[in-house]
Length: 122
Image (cartoon, rainbow, N blue to C red):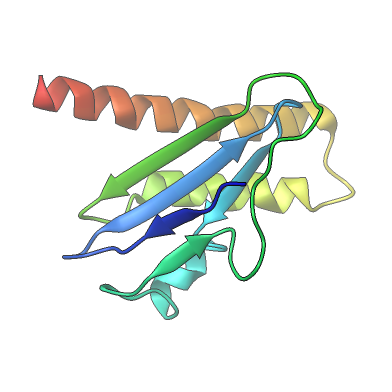
């Protein structure tokens, strides 16, 4: 069993995603982007998943990817793309192609941010 612990300090914004073996993308932290506007605070403990829940290994074979982004500033582009993707994900009227495109846009933005940070620290 696995549980992730965060304790953000000094204006740290944390974005934590999971891409499962079926290529679905989930925002694990914050639960919803709007949490940054009220629920979220610094020097507070957060657990993912929350409560008594745990991630666990099962019999499904494949690779699951966790993406973790931490920034001293809000990443509004990733927030907007994520909100758009989640709106599509929970909609019954959006085509699978549109959903796939929205998911890919979030993943590409994650990769862009990671590359930008890598080059900045290199």
